[in-house]
Length: 148
Figure 1 (cartoon, rainbow, N blue to C red):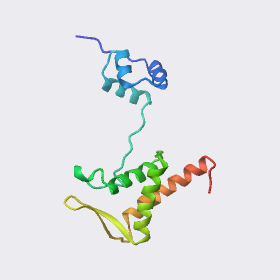
Figure 2: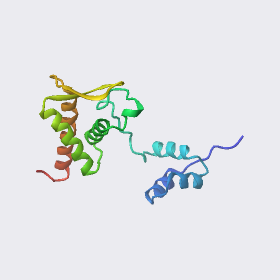
Figure 3: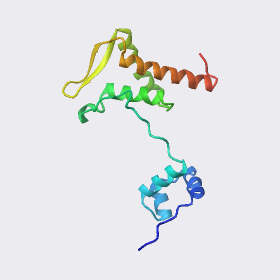
């Protein structure tokens, strides 16, 4: 029976900060890449996973998962959760959502039809997602001293 490899968390943090890949770290410590990922989580070195379930509450079919609406909703969700995304992607998502809200529309999903626009109700999904992204963007700008 082999002994479980020990990963020194301070060394892992230092090497990760130097830009070592997970594959290189795994070779260095004599573990699998999965072992490195687990060690990074345990050491607080990995980014928390972004949960898009509020913005995408549907189970998407594979062919719809990379569509424009899905991508825009994920980008708005990421921003709402404090993630930074490229400005062009954020602008595209905000323009798309703003167009829908401005025209009194919402987004709906059906596994057969995919995403489609519907009249917005009082609890518009897209309006909520857009508002959460805008609120987070404003808070980030205020925190960095970049007020409009």
